Image (cartoon, rainbow, N blue to C red; front, side):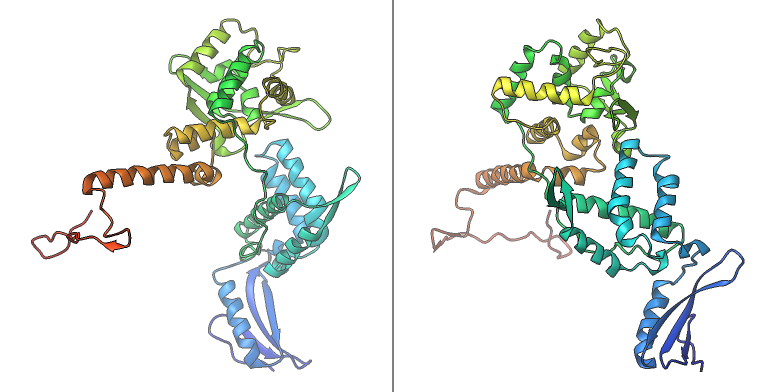
Length: 412
């Protein structure tokens, strides 16, 4: 027996099994026939709120026939059509690993249009408990890795929304672990001085590490620099590529980590001078060629290993190469470089990401700013600025706003 339609495009009926069904059109197949979606309830009263919610969810949505494909099928299509044409092979390999080892076994057989937020949340919760074998021992997945899986799945399903395969992204509103990255380690001023002294005794590596500590380039970016990227007349350096290791050996060349990573930076005068002097003796297109095979750039692993030797010989903390980038950024912020400018130098997506990344610095900067403002206000109004001091009320005139001619309070 068919019931009346609710407000909007929906059909209500009582089925032969006694349940109530609410059905709406959510799209159309290639031949023009409708694609339906239904909700069920024991009574018509219970059904109506569910049906109205579904109508709101699919409002202005016209899904295609491909919405019946499984998540596993869509992920393969996404990698081939979206990822491979634009991303580095190393990134694609990482995506394929996450899909193969984690997403596909749990959700791969689920039809896209039936994938719900609760399914994704259940998947994330299971990842928190999942044990993986690493070097003969079983470990739980790192929270940061689970976040990477979430970011990948979110991007894949965002593309499904854009392709009219689903009405909304089911990763929205899910709860994921907080980041648990290892704390950033930087060289303080005294340690930085020692590092700069240490590289003076490294003639084959001095220019490389001097450039790194004064620009904050990513490891792959500094290894990938060519002389054609340097404009000596303006002191500008273009960051256009990144070098990374291929699985099984060898080097691969690709774009920078992000779109914002493709950037042009203005070199400090000292760094420009170092590179100009180096160019006079250049025998290859690479700014920092391999010591053994100059037709190739310096391999990232070689630079990383040399850093460890320099740090050990100088009695400095055993930091990662990426911590040289953090050292540069931290000292730049602390010495007055604004976040937007620094964001451009580092190739971050936006200034807010830079501020979030270096909260430890900006907190100290806020404290310093507060002290400066406090000193300024005290100088302006006197040391007895506070109306209550030492537990006693001070005999001060209250601070009031001036009024303009129209009677409104004026403030700045």
